[in-house]
Length: 124
Image (cartoon, helix red, strand yellow):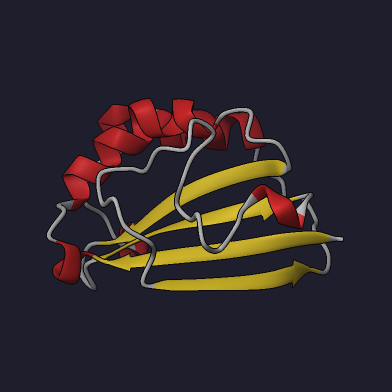
């Protein structure tokens, strides 16, 4: 059984700008989560209009993340927010399919600092 875990922070409450989190996720954040046992994928997301920062984890092992330790990394550190998420939801992954997008291209584009301007789904 695999799991999808969603964690969200209300940035209004924590006072950390999205730009700070984007820079962290592109550099030390990404490196800190690489190789986390039991984690197949981690993606960060933002909603600048709602002032929300979040992460989605795809887990092959439910013990990879401990609710009491979120958002700690492989080295047992936290990111710039430094506190537990405001919301954490665990879901059973029922099925996954691949679309026609190249996953490697998608991951590379998400890592490109030049593509990190503030944007909304309407920009697509």
